[in-house]
Length: 526
Image (cartoon, rainbow, N blue to C red; front, side, top):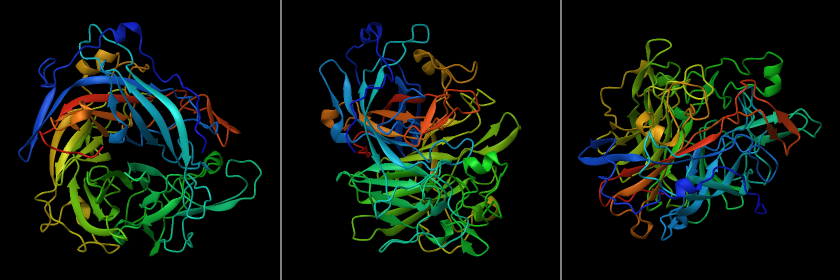
């Protein structure tokens, strides 16, 4: 795809903000420490919120489609990350949307990777009483459109309820859908396309993209130009089954079915086993040496309590060796997600996870959060929105033990006695208003542009001192929100399909940068 030179006014840095740029000590003492945690002998510090920026809700890409959902996952390649003598950082940020605008039904949106240039001017001496606005700029550069192995566009439409699904030589059967017209309600030849609901992104050193999705749940590798190179199908315990057959459908009717009053597009709506609807491989990360891929389900499989908001805590992570010719499953671990009390019901709910990030051989960042709270939601007050840590050093590797279709590691939400879950450690709380207020942001209160969005779904680490690669433990942790393409000025299908979300909101894609201290010598992936 030819690179677009369109600059989107995503955020700006005024003269007053630039004046706050000062040399920074990296010992975490200048602004104190917001919080710290020790996880299996390793100590982590959240020092401060150092940056904020956003992509406007009505920004558009080279095809004329709304840029939305890009907080689903982000990546900042380490070799792109630089800093100049004034302390201003630049780099490349890749971001993936999920399946397009889908708050009112799924659409025939071609999956893609959005590429931005990022400029970050950290601000350290602002305060709640003397805040600044934005200090992160994102400049749109390009879009890589994703295709199946034969070069046909992918789709965000829900998968067919039953097979046969599309097959390609050397690939497992792929989640796919059949549609009429152009899939947006306009005339067209119809078709049968591979479907993706992408949630995890890794940019490999060779420039290819590893992407995890929710429909399969699968892990895909795409070439630099966007063509699918391979697909990893996990064990049958992860694959959704209905009526004793594979059923990749996520009970997500199309936009036009929703308009017609159709609320379910498959029966039964909840698959008895495998990943729950829209709870696939939400988290994806790679080891620093790029030998292993890790993918984590958003919450438990349905045979492990996945259909219950209070019992879906025991989720599963897979580990694949990708250094060999065909990716080999070498590890599976159980991670017990945290819980919170939902104010609207007074009941306990599991904080489902939205992203993971490799720290070392045993420890990972994990983004766990509540739902239905934030900008555009009924409640503005989030009670759990964290970048936490889990450790698998003492967890049971269950590879090959619970892989058949009905195999349960936690039947009814109770972990089997012979399995030890990963150690889970609470860490960085997004909702600390004393930090948010330094950038005119807040959790709870008015439904204004400074209120944090509901869905925070991405993590990326970049060293404070690029020249040492972060060997001193000083990093910026970037996180972006998924705005669900919610805008009053939306365009898809090359600008032919125009929409206005019935919520009435315009949700910008918000980006935060936290300054954190990791254990000295730790070499996390980018």
